[in-house]
Image (tube, rainbow, N blue to C red; front, side):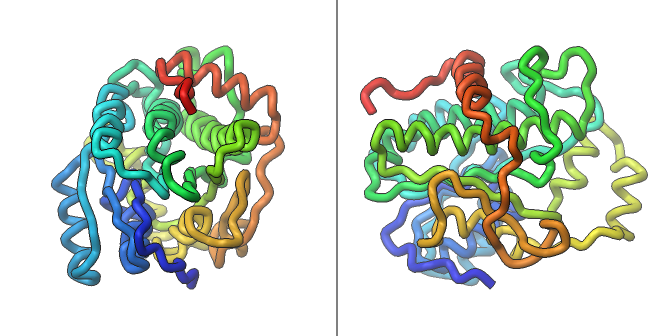
Length: 308
């Protein structure tokens, strides 16, 4: 089990912090002494997670704040609140996500739900928090991708899947976009001489509500396939204790590097201890990464701060 190094004095933001890998990341960071903002869409669920973690670590410094990554004004309000506080931000864990809703759905801003929630929201959040990140001595942005990124394509001619929506393909595109974003942010940080580490991770096949919540959106009950696989799944899987480790490694390990990508080491990357994993070739296409970054700036209306 990965042992998170001492995080005393570190200030962290974790999105999707009320359940799954996000909650586990908060728990482990809290145990290592970090001060953490649980960034959640539903504050009551965040407060419940906070209560449970405090039961284990009574001295933990935990705060719940609301952010809906599918709503850019919410992202702006959340970031503005942190910027107003003025505390340097050491760690940003872009963890929250949604997976494969059966029918095409949209965010509050009209983006396809997965592209908007999994990529455009975290993109806007990260850029709005850059002043705080760059004020920290050794900041890191760790972004959660997925093994599905290996099968992803960026459909620049139809980023929002308006022509023919396919749940799994749209999810793969959003997670490839996350990985491209992590690589492009690392490249920009190097080019500008920032002491900022941007890297990425994927959790393999970790048992969370991600696999059931997304495919059930808009339905009265989970689809038959989801109900079957919840009972009998032929693929190796793991709990959140192991599944959160690649993201924690990316965010805290002295061995992690800018542009690194980390994931499970066994059963074709589905389970096991963390190792360096190979990024899919499409995520290393520098012109495509720059093109996606520009598209994200145009879609979100959020660009790199001119003064950093």
